[in-house]
Image (cartoon, helix red, strand yellow):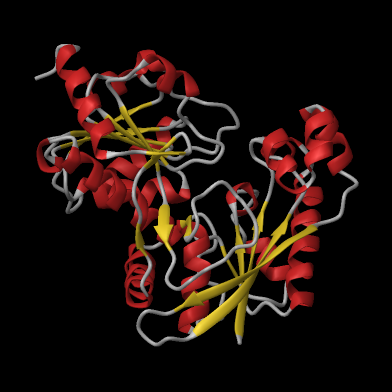
Length: 361
């Protein structure tokens, strides 16, 4: 049976460590966990069973393996040291017999976005970012529909627009909407992206290096590589939709506590075909996975054992291709979750009522 492996790592550090080591996750502080994890080897988490193609019936198996570093460590430790730890984790995948390896969360962001890691491993590698883009854009389109927002007439913002995922999300949205704001840290990179998107796009495009445009935005897709939340309650307009693709999340938990007139969705939850059992609780309901995980699984079902999504320049063609592969095998956008809780239609209607009450027609 063909196989894959997927690397995850602690993001909500104490809680995620408790999923594997309940006692250690409870008694150690986050800083203590980070200290000890520098000397901790990669961790085998589980075998994944039951993934079956809706088109061919073909089955694949996989494994979850963990790199012990946290997002803060991946940004603050020397890059070579972080690479070494991720490669060490990848070698565990090779020993298990994986035929393709997916890089999850910050393991796909560090340095050159997987290129150097793939060069040092025998197993082919993907970051999963192409399918993440496809599902993120589909998510915000569906959420807009439920909130009664016309994407074609909306003001849309992409936060983290010059990143690998943000650029292609911005490209797709520039073809669909009237007004698009690109938000990032570097004006030169934002202007370069704006110039490229204005060729053939229909949107009027603006750029910004702060969050002030969010107050006028109907739809916001956010995908930075920040360690801490960058979007706060006061940034947002009543009735707006925020699709948070980043992990760690970009939207502050204070938004959920303080704003009942905003629809925040966690980007990228996908239904996996077949009676899948992950044998590990990574925080999703049974049978569902992140889009980046789903890309790795779909490539295994397709028999595409090759380096797939790597580097900081992702092509539109690759996004379209993995979307078609995933759809063929039965992967699809799942229901909405917000701050890791399921969202019901009744809750969405409550947000709409609260937004109207807050003064938005």
